[in-house]
Every structure is written in C-alpha cells, then in structure tokens.
Length: 248
Image 1 (cartoon, rainbow, N blue to C red):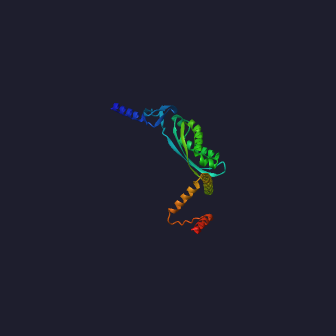
Image 2: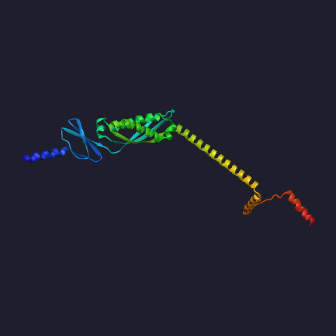
Image 3: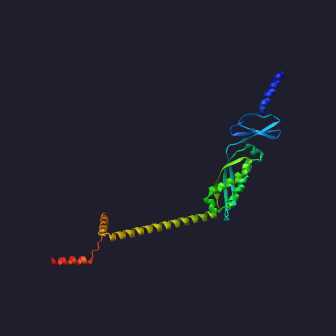
C-alpha cells in the first residue's frame, strides 16, 4: 500500500513537471528565479517549486496602430492609422528585456508615426506612403531589436484630412484636370493645323492633285441624296458658253 501511494505521488509530480511547447512557441525556463535556458518544441520537464516556465508565441503578429493626430511640416492637421507586422526573433529578450513587448511596440510605433508624419508635407504624405511607412519601420526596428522583436512590415492604412482641406484638394485636382484638358486640346489643334498646312503644300505643289481632290469631294457630296450642291461656275466660262451659243 505505501508503494502504491509513492507511485501515485511520483506520477502526479511527473505530470505536474511536464510542459508542452508547441511548434509555434518557445519556452523560457527559470530556476530559482534565474533564467536558465530556452525550451524548444516538445515535452519538457520543469521541476515544481524550484523551476518555472513561460511560453512565447513566435508567430507573426499584427498590431493595429489607432488613429494618431499629427501636424505635417506644412501645418496641416491629419489623422493617420497604420498596422505593424512583427514577430519574436529572440524569446529570451522578449521576456527579460521588456515587461510587455506587445504593449511596448504599439506605444513606440504610435510615437514614431506622429514624429515621421510631422517631418513630411501633406503632398509627400499622400503621394509617398510607402516611403514614410518604410521610414517608420526602420526606426521602430532599431529600438525593438533590443527587445528580441523583428519588424517585418509597416503599412499606412488611412490618412484623414479636415473637411475644408478635402474640398480644397478636390478643387485643386479639378483645376489640374482642366489644365491638362486645355493643354491636350491645344496640342491636338496644333497637330491638326500642321497636318493641314502640309497637305495644302502638297496639293498645291503636285500637278492635278487639287483637281483630283475636288472630284473626290464632289463624289462624296453626291453620295447623299439629301444634299443640295450648288456649283460656282467662273464668269469666263459662262461668257465662252454664251459666245458658242450665238454662233449656233
């Protein structure tokens, strides 16, 4: 009977000592409060009372950076939000170097985003989001690498402007489109005028070309029965015809 009790106690202690570390996790082991090693995936033994452990998820995580009020370099008030993708590259640092690495990277990203947006103009912010996002990623990565984190990507999701500024930008865009339309129209008229000038020179310098062109125009007009064509006959031709009739 005592042997059975001893075996039961040993089994309970053994079960209490087993820690399962999944493939997407790493375990941190402490012995008498001191860090003593990293536990890889699988079943691992942790001596009760003397040792403790903590699991760290090493999968890629997405942190939503909420709307941040910022003022651009040209004094325009904007709201910017972003998302940061990162993963734990060193599980021991993520536990030993920072109290809560998830909260820490979120707060650091918010501060960095406000600072970087403040260094850019509104046009740069709207036209070069990727460059600004890369700049935020570089700065955040430098600091968080000391926490055992690897920042993989930063994306600016939305840039909100005041209503009056949106109207101003809309008017500016409309004016720019009208300007391009006028330029394109003028370029088209210039090209057409140049082609007509070349055609006129070619017709005038080629014998018989003008007569052929006239005949072609008459043929085009006669193809539509609804057209009424009036021919202007030179006075000299009429006088010649009148003289011919008198002789008859």
